[in-house]
Image (cartoon, rainbow, N blue to C red; front, top):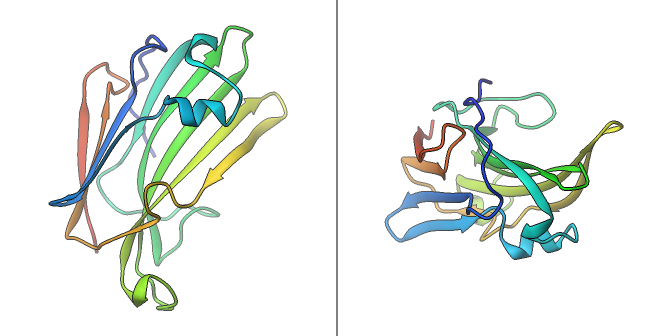
Length: 166
């Protein structure tokens, strides 16, 4: 899946994600907030460089080992960063649409899912340090579409994408 060209920026600027699912069902947060960084024992001052990553193609899609036919990906808003001692990490917010075909959770209804992965990237490969299945709430009410935005985007300005449910 293509991602936007990356623009490096200061670690002191927020990497703000906004998600709107329906009127009154909105989330807004900084990916580099203290809570996320504490999970890996870092503060903003330890960060040398950040790269926002926005990968929301506009259509639901499947990805082997990540998202299947009835639990497709919407996309992700992420930040990759390097510390002053050259360690690399990413905070990856990933959104799905769950058709809930087994009807075994969320009252059997279709819904949007939100997960967060905090990953260390080393020569040995990526290692998930923290996986949060329930960020604000794991399952949010179904609506005709979801809007995801990242500010700044890899191009340095805010980007927003709307994805419609099937």
